[in-house]
Image (tube, rainbow, N blue to C red; front, top):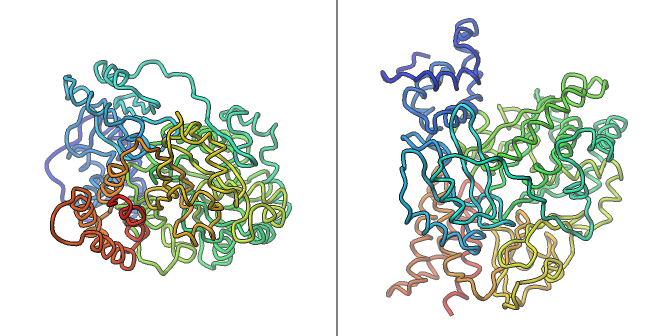
Length: 591
C-alpha cells in the first residue's frame, strides 16, 4: 500500500515504545507489506504502548505506527480517537480518572470533583478527568491513576478521598504500592467464589493444591463431544445479559467446517454497577485460564483471546502472570498436559469503550479497527474474529465450565430453576450495608439477597433498586419479592443483565441518577447507526426538559417514542437498551 503520511516524525521514546511491541523495524522489509497488514491486530497494543510511555499519542508516533503496520493514517487516527483512554492531543503524563458514575455519585464523587476543580496545580505535570464506571462500585468512590513513562503504572484507588487524590496530583507520582484490599465476597452457595480471598491468586501451586486443573484433566478424558453435551445438559445461559444458551454456541463452533476456530473471553465488563468479572480475574485468575482452556478444547479452538477492559490493570496483571505460569507448566501451549492438544491465550486490553462489550465490536477492536458492531447475521459462530467461527462468552459464563465438567450437566441443572440453572453472581452496591459480590442460586428472592447484604444503612428507607445495570430497569419496594431468574425478571419487565443490584435510599436524588444514565449512553454510543447516535442525544434532551419541568410538549410520550425507535432499529444492544432504565422510572419521577 502506498501510504501518505505527514512530515511529523516519531521521537526516540515513541519509536522505542512501538519497537518494544513490534520488534526492530529492520525486520519489516523481510516480512513484506502483506505480513505487515496481517499484523494490523497489533494496533491496539501499540497505541497502548505509546500512551503509556509518553502520556499521549502524537502525530509523529502515529505516522511511525502506520508505516510499521501498513495501515492508512486516517484509519489509525480513527482508531486512536475512538477510545476514551487514548489522547491524540498533548496531555500530562500523570492523570487521575475520577469515576462520577451512578455508584460513585451516590458515594460522594461530585464533592470530590468539586474539590479537585478548585485546586490549582500545573496541568502540564498532572491532571484529572471525569470517568464513567470503573467497575469498583463495592468500594466507591473510586479513581484510576495512570502514570506514563519508561516504567508506566496504573493503579485503582478505592475508596478515594479528595485529599488523597489532591496529594497524588501535587506529587505527580504514585507512592509505594498499597497492600492488596481483601475482596468483599459473600453468598449462600459459593461455587465460582469458593477460592476468592482464600488462596493466593498469584500461586499456581496453591491453585493446583485446591483442585485446580482437575476439571481440564476430566475434560480430556471425556473428549470434546462429551464436554459439549454436558454443557448443553446444564442449560447454562450466558451471564453477560443476552442469556443465550452456552452449549448451543459450543456445538455450533465445534461443528463449523471453516478453520481455524477462535475462543474469545469477553472481559470488557463496562456496564455501570458491574464488577463480578473483575473479581474473578483478580482473585481466581487460574480458574479463568482453566475454564478458557476447557472451552477451547471442546469447541476445537487452538487460540484464545481474553479482552480485558483497560480500566482493570490488576486483572490484566494477574491474568498475564497466570498465563505465563500455566504455559511454563505445560498447561497452555502446543501440547497441553501432554495430551496432543494445542491451546494458547493472548490478552488484549481495551481502552475505554463501553460498546466493545458487544461481541462483534470486540472482534473489530482485537483486529485493530474501531470498536463498532457488525450487522448480524452472519453470527460469530459462523463468521467471527478474523472471519472465522468464534466462541465468545464472558468471564462468569466460562467460569461455570469446570464445575459442570467435574459434576455433570444434570447436577448443575438441579440448582436454580429449569429455565435459570446454577448459581448467579450479583453485584450489590449503592446505599447498602455490605456492598460486594454475592453468589446465590437462581430463584433467590430479591428481598432475601438485599437482606443478606444488610439492607440500606442507618435506618433509611429504600427508594428504588436498579436491577441489571444502566441498561436494566428500576424497581420499586413493591417488587422486592421478585425471584431472581431470567424468566421472572422478563415477566416483571426487567432483566438480570450483568447482575447489578444497586440500592438507592431516600436520601438519593434519583433525578440526578437518571440524568447520569442518559449522559452515559449519549457518550458511549459509537455513532455508527442513526437511531442510537441521534436517539441517545434526543433522549437526554427530552429527559432534561421533563425533569426541569420545561413548558410545552409531551416529553414523557417523546421519551417512549425515542425508546421504541432505538429498540427497534439500532444495530446492537447499546441502542436497543439505552432507554430501558429511564422509561422504567421517569413516570415516578414526575409525581
